[in-house]
Image 1 (tube, rainbow, N blue to C red):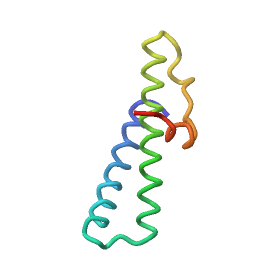
Image 2: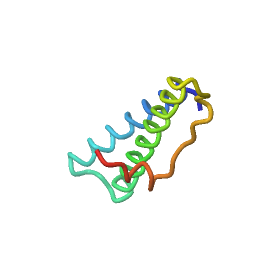
Image 3: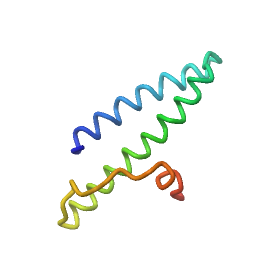
Image 4: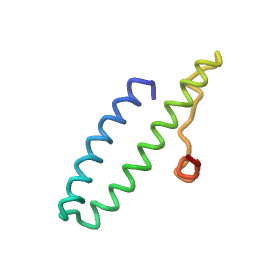
Length: 80
């Protein structure tokens, strides 16, 4: 994926995340909605991580296309 494709994925995931949060906050979320929300959040973390990798590789004079999506276990294990 290139940067515009990653940005597009992020925008779509954020829109879905907002919709799911609205259902959650209004008390109308199903168990499927709650599971999907967690999946969306992990996917967003993966997209942001991939975008950061690409930028870092570009800044270092390396090929940004060599960046690879990391597993959920890796991106969810990062410490803030």
